[in-house]
Length: 471
Ligand code: ADP
Ligand code: MG
Ligand code: ZN
Image (cartoon, rainbow, N blue to C red; front, side, top):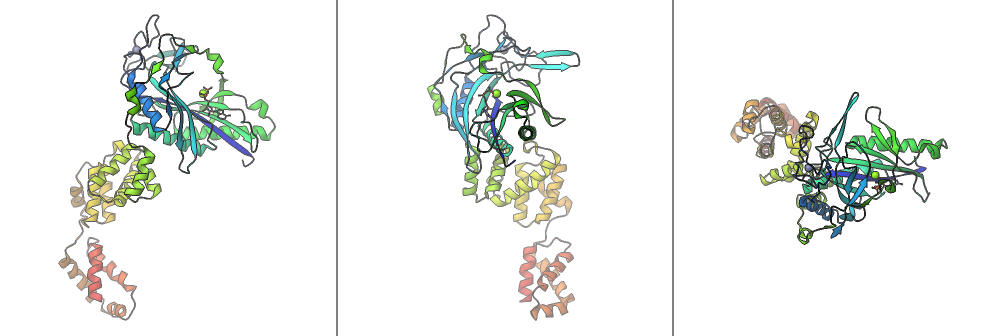
């Protein structure tokens, strides 16, 4: 491995969440009856004309701002010609000569910059469905707006590729320009991978692995490909084995397989789409305010809430998580407690159950109340965890759960003092030893009092009273 250097560049297709398609008024909803969301334009019928969707333009501009890119006032649409059953026009309308967004950047946690070459608007194709001997075409997706985000070949490991992708994913979700649901295909990635001997100036031959739709598969596919290239070098078979081509990742075997030779852009016979004038971004779009971005929020959490970098990173990794956290703060929970209850306790339970934060059975209000009851010493930390366990299962109120589980701590000083007195008089010998200097017996007394109270005495008050009595 150390003899070689990996080079990765990623192309990401993000489905923009506009209500209607990019060049017609058909809805973009997912999962409807096949071929119901279609019209002459997205069916590619002769004479039908495309009309640009302004919302899609706006969302592309927002993305450009978020990655500090150049937004082109004028950009152009070209036809990318190829033949495939899910592409009824025989061409895809895309941006080739001048994309709407150019020259952006995303920074990894270690400060390394990953360049974004361009981001351009285009229409999605339909879907081919193969069932045994029969193949069907569903054109509901045809004409859905896509933003294709092309990175520079700046990544040097699968880990860097995944980190870049996660940052990109978070940015898109924070901006609210796509649901970026990977399973449904609204955030899909083509990974370009090459390997070169260390010190070699030119890049190695790149292969493109198409349509990867989970972070795990992307990592597996890239790592498989790296291995394949290195092996080819080692066996002196590089020229034969590694050719510029498109490959598919088989999720079952964990291998990539050749799909087709790589087309050059000349194969697509790009030419300007005569049905669409060059796109002129409206002036007011240049002044659009974009929401606080993940890295800005992370920085703010570290400064304002004094959270550790790691914790701030977790909490800001998804907009819903950050929203949940901020709600808890708003309700008066201290940042560190909110972090502990949310990032460790709740997320731990949600991950185990395979539930996302959006679908958490425990609301921010309820989790905040657990933290508050802990702070008030109504319950102990351990008690709070039991309450949370119950709330994961049952839709009840926090105080009800505390009651039901019998977790209310005794904070009444008189009651605790009584128990302390009993414990001390039952252990007069130990009290004498303690007073003679055996200070570590203090823990023994605390334990006895807790035991006598069946674990319900407020430990802080127990400590305080014991100290008074023993000094
Ligand atoms: P195409 O549509 O032909 O795939 P693009 O320009 O859209 O071309 O995308 C090319 C992608 O491949 C970019 O992300 C670029 O960074 C990446 N890339 C180019 N050369 C290499 C290479 N030698 N190794 C890895 N990635 C590369
Ligand atoms: Mg490509
Ligand atoms: Zn349509």
